[in-house]
Length: 205
Ligand SMILES: [Fe+2]
Image (cartoon, rainbow, N blue to C red; front, side, top):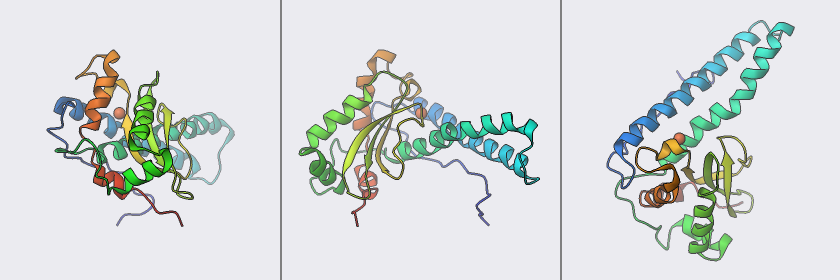
């Protein structure tokens, strides 16, 4: 039985044969993702161990603090990779169909899908280590593109990730030089599962 204390299990994704993102890159990337799942479980175990006697002893405070501070990095490292792999597929089309709910919310928020894309690609090219994420505000339905430093700095609480693009160098280093991130971004767009992205869109209440 799955309980709230069951450790997280790494999900598997069948993504071989993408355009411009090699199987070798993906295999390496899946291993990195597995590492985030393991680290998340490990942090939770160690924190639970400290809490077991119902108190945080003074000598446990430094360890407890450090473990707790690392949760944001490891949890987001796990969850963002799941969104990223789940919004890729073989045989994708370059753009979402006109009827796609994702395209529609982008047009409502940016006036034009091409402008939304210019912004998202621009965010993906920002210098630094992190992610480009198109988020939807569930209260208004509006979408906005955000730069996330590492895994945890810049995420907007309560917003829904619609399209998630990993731009850490490990996402493309086996296929492109570090300075060629724009080529990787182009490859990313050749493999987006627009149906999966559309399924993440919510209609505001
Ligand atoms: Fe990654």
